[in-house]
Image (cartoon, rainbow, N blue to C red):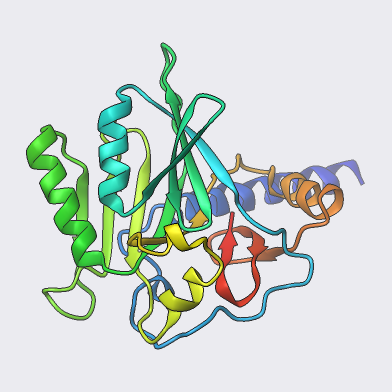
Length: 243
């Protein structure tokens, strides 16, 4: 029995090693997933699980130069909000990026940020202008899925080169209007519509424990995806986010 269990453990470890490498590759795609691009005439998000958490309310990011960071995120399509506990706030739809001065060792989010905007051409133009004015190279890749003139997916680094953002244009056909329906009137004019998703790499063999934490202790909806697992957040038909 001992030998059999040892063989099984070795086999499981091999599977986890292989899956870990696959997941790591999928978490950093060259092209954003098809459903993120503005190619379908969707007007609302599909109905989410009843166990979905409500909202990814905010993410705190450390930045070495506050004014440069604010210029970048406003150019990306965000809107400056009211400071919270000393943090500068950028509204990305219903969610916030809270910027705080960095410590000696700059902490970065280990995965990607997925953001939907209404006009990706405007975002690309703003980022190009930011590069000229600041001297920072923030545009990593631009993908033209449907036509050469359209910026279907924009891969960006923040000015500090720490955090990675994938920006996609929201599907045409009324989706932007639906997403703005949950926002205060002052936020309805910004180009950025939502912080749609975050990816967070998990160490090999730890997925089961992470899934149990969210599902058992938070009562959250956790679904299996091609990339790994997703914790669902939903504000009804106007917004569906995943972690």
